[in-house]
Amino acid sequence: MAPRYGLQLYTLRDDCARDLEGTLAFVARCGYAGVEVASTHDLGARQFRALLDAHGLAVASMHAMAFGDEAPRAFEMARELGAQLVVVPFAHPNRFASAREVAELASELNAASEAARKHGLRLGYHNHFWEWRALEDGRKAYDALVAQLDPRVELELDVYWATTAKRDPAALIRELGPRVTRVHLKDGPADKFESPMVALGDGVVDLTSAMQAATRADWMLVELDQCAGEMTEAVRRSAEWLRLPRAAEGASARSPSATSTET
Image (cartoon, rainbow, N blue to C red; front, side, top):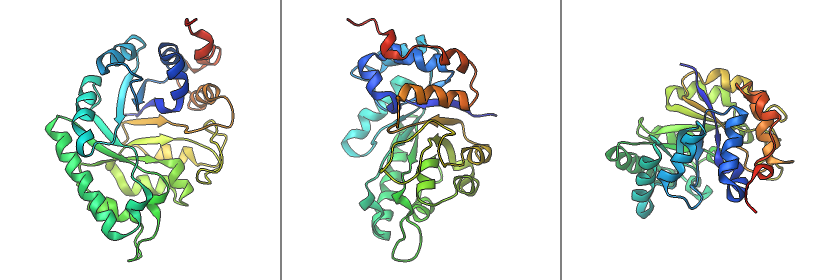
């Protein structure tokens, strides 16, 4: 089954804060089939889901730090949104400083995965670039982490950060196989946090090979943390690069802020 294409809404966080409904309408016009949720922008989860439904946008997954005291609320929100997968979006670089730290993180993720299953949900993990630092035993920290994770913990492979870490995203996806159920697509110079990102196809990331390798992923999600130009333009152009249905319609649409009804 072919993957669906969506947008991680963190990309348009500023637009969502100014005009949430206009931004969701814009995302739909660009041709994205759904979104990955990072925030409900002060709305209840059910109300937020109703807005998504109104614009025909599915919930691909939800980013949340599903550990400790935050976990019950995160799982409740995911269920209300209809997100079957909760993705832990970040682990501090210090968690990859030693084999012991990596083993402790793996244990926490495994426990979070077990808790998620009790709520009828699945858990995933999203990488940055620091996961591939070398451990004292010579292994890469990411390899050590994956080896200790319960196979039911899914992987959201961010191809930009993998490239930044001098890894081949397509080779990684093939190596990790069916565990990669989400792929984050972003582009740019791949030089850590020093330079802003760009629309898909305008940077150095070999997106085409990665996408061809991700035959078992359910969703491919565009995410730009920051942008060299107007973010909405980069989101629109990324949809065009992906040749999404309705992308041409989105190309002629005004930006969310221009369509806002707020006064």
